[in-house]
Amino acid sequence: MMRRSLVVRQVVASNFLKSPNQSRPFEKAAEEHKTAGLDLAAGLSSNFLSIQVQLLKYRIVRLSDEFAHLRQNPADGIPTLSSLPFKLFWLFVFYQIGLLLGRLDTQAPVKPPVQQ
Image 1 (cartoon, rainbow, N blue to C red):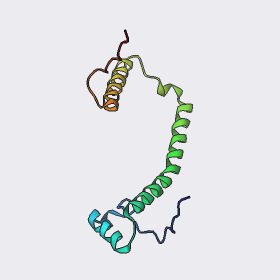
Image 2: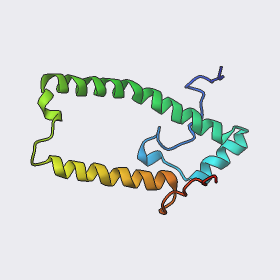
Image 3: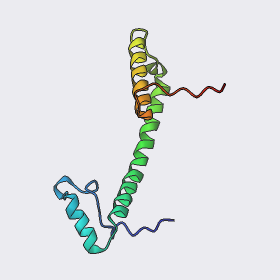
Image 4: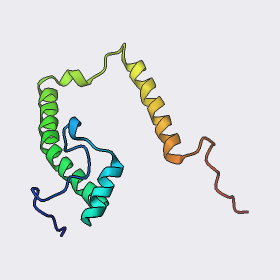
């Protein structure tokens, strides 16, 4: 289990939890953590997790709103005949981009060796 200090006592490492006029450069934040004897990476991870926990409730509500909209208007998710070729084309393009980026290679896959 992770040990966490009280939110009041936590030193904010990132600029995400601050207003824009209170932002500071990374070097200054690193120096402040070094002088206080705190781990900057642990502070950044803690800040990231707290932001994600705060966003989780919003995302759940947003997802339920999306499902409610689809339940009320089920035909909105079905493409029309005029838009179907366009959507299929972009589906293929994004699939190919994902395939190329996932393999990190633009060449054809190497064929397996044939045993004789």
